[in-house]
Image 1 (cartoon, each protein chain N blue to C red):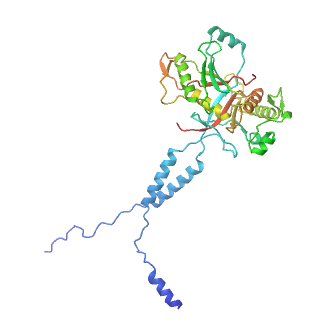
Image 2: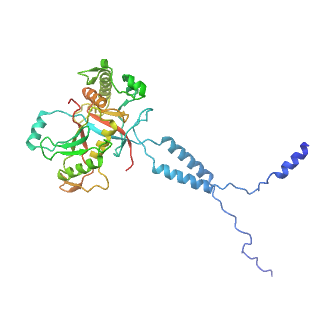
Image 3: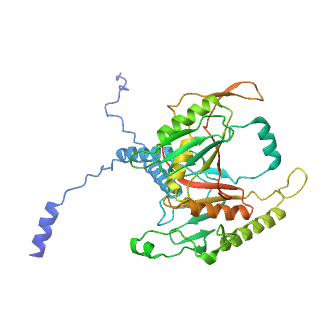
Amino acid sequence: MFKRPSTRRRTAPAEIQINLIPMLDALVTMISFLMYTMAFLAFTMIESPLPIVSSEQNEIQLKDKPLQLTLTVNDKDVLLWSPFEQIPQMTISNRPDNSIDTLKLHESLIAIKQKFPSENKIILVPKKDTSYEVIVAILDTSKVLDKTDPIISVKNEKTGVQEQVKTLFGDIVFGNLLGE
Amino acid sequence: MAARRSIRDRRGRKKIHKDFELQLTSMMDILVIILVFLLKSYSTSTNSFTSVPGIKLPLSKTQEMTPDSLHLIVTPEAITFENGRVVEFLKTADALSTDQASYAFKPEDLDEGGMRIARLYDALNKAREKAEVLRAKSPARDEKGNPLPFDGVLAIQADKRVKYDTLRKIMYTAGAAQFRIFRLLAMRQDQ
């Protein structure tokens, strides 16, 4: 009787190799597509409505005495004031290089927002020669709440729940757009 | 001589092993990293705004997306509305000598006490009328069955050096042509 042959394999198992070429093709195609359709320039926008004069609204507002926060850009400083004297007038002097001190301005705006958390409107009155860059910087300062800023909450009139404010003064109107 | 060189060349040539296979794993790694990076920084937008040579946009921290709308560009030479040059700026002596744009209007281009830009007003009015006609033909209706009203949105793309006086005239003119909302474009600055 012969012995039964061993089932143990003596040869090393054949190496299994995944065919990476189709995957490589797919990756190259995807990268090409993404690079072709990608928007490398990220635009953003700051919206501002045209100021509308309405006598009816004015009458209602006059009864309530609104804040009507106004930011006036002068040659050497920036003024924060309310025509109805809801806040004392604040003067933020420019830096030594005559650029607007946006940090101080932002701090002052936060202090006002903490006092009037439901107020969302700011009227911007730039000078004739104020550059677009400065206007955008002021709009940013007036609108955007930084991560390091204190949390400001306001009561939602519909739900009655206190909600965190997401923007500082989001509704920006140019005060002298229709005339001085 | 030629035969000798041929033999020498053949000796010098490295033999390629029959089982040679290109190692694609490292290349795959690189491609996957590039793909992940692209997917992370990918941003799609529905607008047709593009950068314009000669314009340096200001930086802004706002993160709002810019939906498509009628588009006005203030270049150092002229005001362009919907890819058509509408008004050319005055070329002053200072502007020519210093290569700085004046952004000043010719007196004949202005009316209403120097506040309205006449040609721009005409162009904006035409665009509004066209938009109103399109809306009248569109099946989209409001609750009462009337065509949707003209949204009156104008995106303004201007150089960061443009003065408020120029912007004010543009916005005043747009307001006269029943444009009610202005979108001031800027470059997004990461916080």
